[in-house]
Length: 439
Image (cartoon, rainbow, N blue to C red; front, side, top):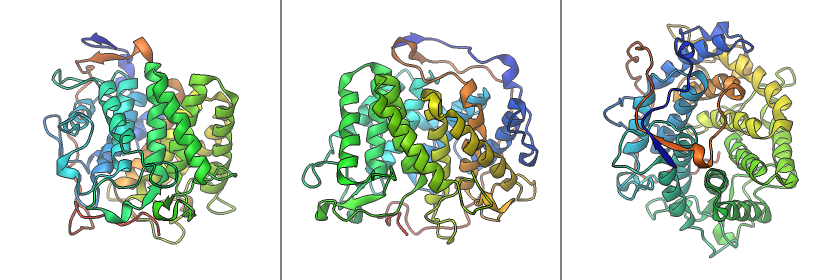
């Protein structure tokens, strides 16, 4: 890595974004996309009480992992729109949670931190490294080094006592129900972070681990012959009891990891894997009804009204990784444009609730606002709308392109952030054992 004091890669005009009403979104107009994204980003940020000087956990019922994922959404907002207004807040959050060993293992969150939680922070830290996002704290490692530390922590828990390998869902005995479950989001997180570190550094150890995790996932049947990504399996049963539930974000996590491997290796097998994952994903998560083609939905729970707080954010990560995959694998661009263009338009129409007419709902296929609100709903709409700009943004950097940047890019003053919204639900404890994400 190279050290530089500051970068100014965003055109000044791109920073002058006015907020727009989501109902007016034109998916073919970059200025319209940016203006609507600005509005939705403000709505999402209203759930966060931290600022440029301090990190604050999200209010219940949101867990620590979702704050890491949320910062990834805001990194995307900055990268795609050029609006750097939130960059100091994002950097403070990313660095404040690195933990005493700089690997995102925080003693204060051990009661709720699993391998998947750590991986979700890893996605965001890696994105910061790949974009030369400002890292103002000279006492902390670079974003790339932080990601490497996080990777080392994950790899150290690769468990061969059953199923010939794999990561368990949970780490600590305080969450015992997850200590018998090898889930795809944890293993997919290790797979994707391995691939991205391999691309960024050229270190073959990372690419070998990416191959290893993919091969293990296929071998135990968590990615089946139709390229459906299942939720997980019990280690006590040697992973013979595959949980048939499938969630959108796990497909996205594996797809982007495969896309990175395709970019690194040029091996057609990885391109084929991306294309097959996309084929299944498009068929399963984008057809809620026959008259609602290409509208994204969380198939496991939306129709039956059983999406929990975690699940209500999953579509956003699928959007994020679909857009990112299309940047690296050109053959999937037409399909991604088709399904996410229609979904972005539908998401914008769902962001028409509340007193200001800009609050986002959950079910995009109803043709408007459905009354279901929360941070997850805001994140899903934000990622799907702002991602329309992904092909115009700088691709993820690698090798000597990655630098340590200390100063934030200048940006026009923005209006004060809205007051943080209070949660409509509460939980007795945010540090207790979490229940499984299944239905």
